Image 1: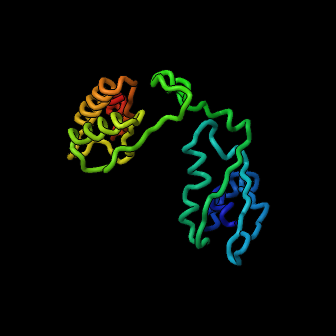
Image 2 (image 1 turned 120 degrees about the vertical axis):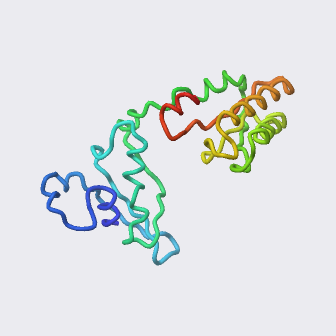
Length: 201
């Protein structure tokens, strides 16, 4: 547990003179408790505490890279699983959250008093734009409130972004006309450049 704590904070695989340039002991994570997993002989819960100054305020990317990051490829442990994270309220307050939340989504979708029903388009890769739009239409017409692109879908040769956008929106509009309900589709706008992402969004 001490090795995992070190690897996920200030330690490295070898001794380096640059450790003398910083307050490594102050910032090093501390393994403060180890409990055996009930009914096992070789599994343990390790409790590790981190100094709050190790994390950039409001950055989920920094938090996950620090806590999870390369420690899961760390050869000193045979297996590792993150069970829980407890974060100080002061740190949590630095996360602004999404620009909109469930209330705004309910207002946009005109859906109240019940859970949203959504799904991801499958198969996630290989559909043409026309067939992708058909899946969107059939899913929404069949009762879904929304569908979403899989994170693997961007603008591949079998279905370019603009084609997917046009056919998906056609499917959304047709399902609205057929059902009389507000429907939606969440499109993945990630791209190789920020300019392309802005244009898609």
